[in-house]
Image 1 (tube, rainbow, N blue to C red):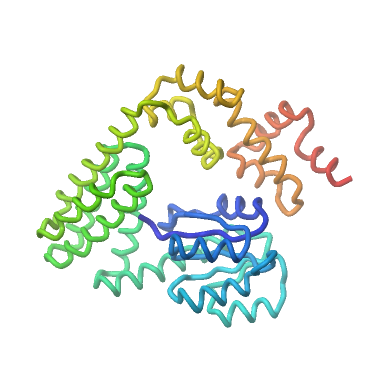
Image 2 (cartoon, rainbow, N blue to C red):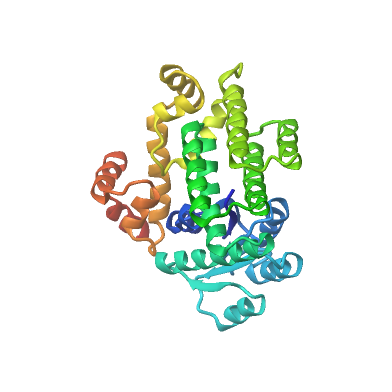
Length: 350
């Protein structure tokens, strides 16, 4: 898929803020996990082998300095970005010592953060291009295309997959990338991305192994890859479509990860192959709220927590909670809690 990133900070709101400010998809990046301290982060690094770790410095237990030391020693290829609330020369010195990509101070400037993310993505693409003998700009383009394919796969969108494959064909034709070895390198990367998407959606290992045989047998065309993506997508659709019982906990988990996005009853019903009426009924029976109320409650609870931090503007809190229109956020918040966001913040400071 894309290059994987993990966020490390003992404060949940800090991790939420970085998630919100980062233009992940635009840079071909994907936040694949979070940790509250260095020890937890090190276990996560061993599990997912991320390409980038964004870490705070002051944390209970194993702090950022110790974490950087361990990563630098065990996983020298991982890029480290330090974000700290302290303008401390010793911290900066340690970041330089362990070859961190950059050192940002809180509150984080979105432009600075995204400039660093873009630099990391380019460095990773350069390393990938060197390993595969592909041009750097093509490796960067492929990272974006793989991200698109992953998104279409997760959304059960075959037409999106076909369209993205067509864009890749046009890109390669424009660049005159027609030699067999070039096609093999590209198809190999797309195959790895497909396997990651299949693993993430719990598709059977046998199917993944079967897909690999085509490349070994010399099937290196994009037509072959498109066919494999669509075949795997059919398997995913069949798996969800013919489940004996709806897994409401799975839907709740999805909402908790995507509450700041435009999650609707229609969208969820389509993705999990149930009627809107049935989904709404079962969810309310299980959690005591209908879906719309649950999403609103989650957004408001998160916004209330984030307001406790004076470093966050109310506009930033609104955006993190999924509201682009700040005026509308004020109105919804006041209706939910009976006080405006600014009043609640003042009340909590007393």
